Image (cartoon, rainbow, N blue to C red; front, side, top):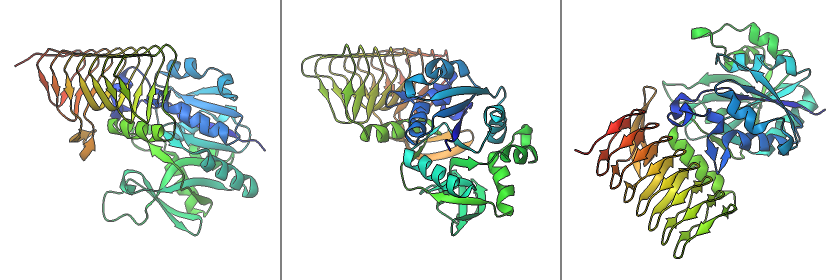
Length: 391
């Protein structure tokens, strides 16, 4: 039996603003490929030949990129989730496309194909509801899973009190029987009418009907802006450095290991592109500039002498001469949650302009189409379309 895969890719990704103001979360580039493409590739490598993408927020970006899936040797269909009403609701949208047991997984978590293959093989052998579990040193950020042998006995979503009873978490990869659709409909909705697949699985756990498959392969989650840098760096560590067609490298320019550069890019005299950096198409890096542990999206310019470390530069943006994003750690509040010592030198939003000699303090986020005057210091969040003047 060849299983279909239902990949959930409808979410907006509010925690990732300003990057998700113009693109859906699954289309954020990781190692110069959309996050969702890494997931699709892993599923195809596991032997899946048919995929249903559940899309919603800015879905045209996903549909135009993946088309019918021919480029990936897979048939892709699209189910539409017009309102993002939870993962259970998202899976329901795929019901008309699925006529047998199926695989379901999140489109914003990079996994190895071996994880997918292990679930499919186990399900084909026993026909059970399965979920992949993986160890983490941050279990309270996810759904903590308790096992007895391989039987799932409990899932607690983001426990906030006391010590977690397990270091295993829900990896967001499942094998379901057709009956899951009726189970989702029978599950009470949460606040705002949202339907969580984890709540439905909780009902199945009570009946002893869920098994956990342990995964120790690569599993990387992208939830916050600093995750983009960390996941990008990890993905680049797994690949060889590369440059695209039309690449021009001036004399004295240095390109380190773990770097990917897209098509039609230029790197100026004595510039340095350091480890963990992915540069999109049609990007210019000026003379004597330093770019390290960074994600630079297409059509952007990093001018002469700029230093850009631990930074995301979104599409069609300009970072002026001698700008300093020194990198390092910062404390940030995202969606009313406090995070300490995260590695994020800064974010420059789409179509933003940062003038010469600007200093960007660690953790600062410049919104889309914002303008920062030369010589200014940026601290904290700059709203979209805002102007920051010196002094």
